[in-house]
Structure formats: C-alpha cells, structure tokens
Image (cartoon, rainbow, N blue to C red; front, top):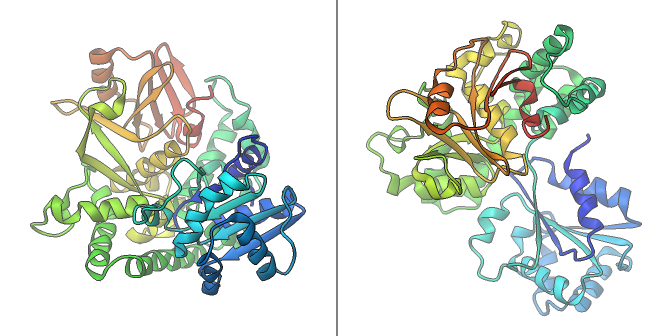
Length: 434
C-alpha cells in the first residue's frame, strides 16, 4: 500500500548532510513494511536486522561501537558485504538493544557515507530511559496510521483522491463526489487507518474481519504495557488507556483523572498518560488561556483532552456496531461527535505545521475544538458532527481575537463567506493548501 512517508524517505536519502534515520511510531502502524519497501526499491542491497526476532544480534555491539568493526561483523551475520552507497542497513526494533541505538552516533560521525535506518515500536519510551541516546546525531521520522487520503488510495479511489489534491479553491464539489467521499469517510471512521486492518478490508470488504484485527491490535498494545513497564506502571497505563474512549464519549471531552478511577489524583496517573504519549498511542490537546504566539507559552498543561491514535481502534474499544456505517450520519454524531473530533485530531497531527494540538474555551460556554498556528496567523477550527450552520463559539472567538479566517468542518460541502471558511470533514488535511 502507498504511504505518503515514502517521499520523506526519498528526501532523506538525497540529503547531503544525512544522518542515521530513526523511524518512530506505535506498534503496527507500518514502519517495517515502509522501510522494507523503500530499501528494496531504492537500494541495490537491503540488510535487515531485527533485534526482537534475533536477540543474539545484540552481542555484535558488546565489544566495540566503531562502525568499521560493526560493519564487518554485521556483514558476516548477513552473509554478504555491506557496501557504502549501495546497501541500506535497517535496524528494526532497535529499542531492544540500547548499544545499537548508541552506535548511530558513531555511524554519523565516522561513517556518514553508509545509509542506516532504525525503527522501533516503543522508541519514545526507550529514548527516555537511556542516557546514551545520540542527541543531535540522528534524523527523525514519525509514522502514524494511514490518513483518510491514504485510505482512499488503498481502496482504489485514486481518481477521487486526485480530485481533492488538485483542489485550490472553496467551490463546492459536485454532490455525487461529495456524497461518495462522505460514504468513504464513514467506512474510514469504522475501519480506521491501521495498515493491517486497511489491507484486510481492502481485499475482503468484510467489516467483521476488520474488527477482528482491530481487537488483536488492541490486545497487542496491552501486552506491551506489561512487557515494557513495571507491574505497577502497567496497571496504571492500562487504566488510563481503557478510560479514554468513555472520556471522549462525554459531551465535555476534557480528560479527568478522577474518571479513570474513583478518587484518583493526577499525581498517580500523570506518568501513565506520558508513557502512552511516548508510545505513540495517544495525542494530547492542551487548553489555551489566550491564543497568542507561541501557543505553547499560553497552554495550560494540566488541562487537556486525550485522543486515540486511530478512529477505528476507538470504535473497537467502544464496540460500535457496523450498522452505523449505513445509518446516515449517525456515526458522525454518535457519542457527542467523538469519532469526528478524534479523526480531525489525527489528521491535524500529521500536518507539518502542527507541532501540538490546542483547544480554547471562554469563561462562558463557548469552545473551539482546535486552534491552529501558521506563519500567516492563528486560526480557530470548529468540528461539527452534523449539518448544523450554528457557529456561536466561532463568533465569540472571532469577536474577541479577530483572526484573519475562521474555519469549521462538518459533513457539509466546501463554502467560503468572507472570513468564514467551511471544509468538509474529508478535506481537513487540505486546510493549509487552499
């Protein structure tokens, strides 16, 4: 399946000052598949080393981290010579071997002519535990579940996708195209973007198969809690993780530690939320007191919402029935619009001008779901689950801060009226393109 990040790998390969690349992301978002495809297509040879499947690989790094010594030993293990400029070296599940992670520093300093990519499912967690991480000596690439646009391509809808990617204005699409895109979006909210789920559904068109794989992935995540954390930490990680869907299903989606467990305090569960964030399983959106630059300076770090990495997994955790896909727009509005808000959070996280997610509330009852900072200003984005034209919160925000534009996204078609811009939900990723 085509992934947009393939272009990022090509850009990395062609950099003159290239460093070893660390590919981060949650388990099963497609890191290994992407790098393998890239290595086999773009290099003469592809040397694959998996520290989880082959634990004895770690012994190669025990005596020396000098690249020439490692290259000789790795070549012997692989069975043929690793050649500079022609071989891509791929260290998979590198978090299982901290000294291999440290070796990336020496590849950059002493052997930059060799192409080295590393990946790991819990790299964010592992990096926080090692004091020998090669700071400043590696490039980073974060991989997420497949976006809605990538899902369209996987479903064979390249022409429909091209129609969106070519769009440069706010003129409404023909209703036939608009309706078809909304139908695909309903399926995407159910299937989600985990590559294994998308691949299975694309070939079988069987919703039950998709849900079965989603449950397997969720079980794998929970096994990671026990494998990569202490027993006490694993319990807290699991409690926070399992509470997220029901907290998103509230009208007020602000995350409350007391809802994890009765009487719970933030001091008990803060580390669990941070572990889940580092593992790539959640995205946090912070409350803004005032939307000024830099947004991070005005964020209240103790007030936030938590979104799951994938809308399909959110649906699996809530056990949403597949019949909702065909029940009009019910899936969009279910649980106070939890799915569309989570979906928008996922889409925004992938955009290169969004460093963190933020939301804003007034002292009364106005709330703007996302605040976006770009080079040309700060913009509010409100998410609506239905066809409503009501924009009270946006107008409250606009009167107070006078942004150049205000954005809303819902199931309605493209429109623009002076400073008011409406994007259909399926086109949120175009917010910086039009």
